[in-house]
Image (cartoon, rainbow, N blue to C red; front, side, top):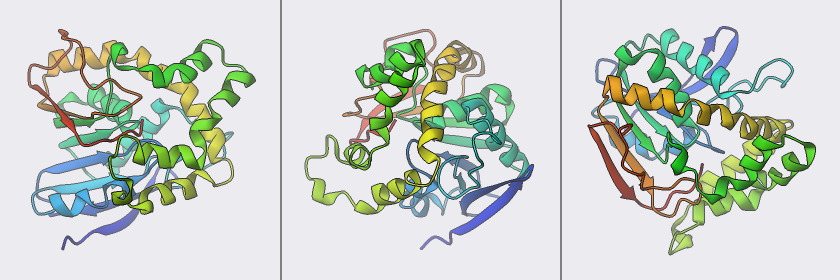
Length: 265
């Protein structure tokens, strides 16, 4: 059984929780989770990899166990979350590492990669999008909020934060739902129920447009830096299309694999 440590780090005054396993001198793999989860989504993956990799899985600010400052004290944007995560790798002395990015973790990880291409050894995006064609109809209510950031369109996307929606993200497309452990969505809903967490998540829905604006920069990074890249997709994902159109933006080292159903954005 893997020896997993549960640690915190001070990142410029912000307490960041992270899981760590494996030998420090092994190749490092940084695991960045998606919405609405936290590093606990990797609790079963980490033991499978700890004999070959040094694993670091942080909770992103606003998710999971780290400090959750009030919105007036912390700007909940993907750029700021990337700043904190980037700084965490420096605090932990991670000079070279691969990225495993899921959903929301993708634009965070891609930002870090574009800032420090020389530090990235490989990227594994799982349901991690970087092209406009990949946004499926599941994003329509959110895109309506981007175009008209009114109170009405903000309220229309609050449904994404309801407990039943979280459960649906785990069970959508699964042929036998009794095989889905309630531990994951139960903990996700616990974190979402914290005071102020809903407004933070709504802020991030609005700010997701900033990720789309950076897609050309992400694609340029893939073209010029040519990182080894394995793209893994849940075939029933209602938010991101798993089959990108052929494009010069695709890394020449990219492999796309359709995997078991995974739906969280």
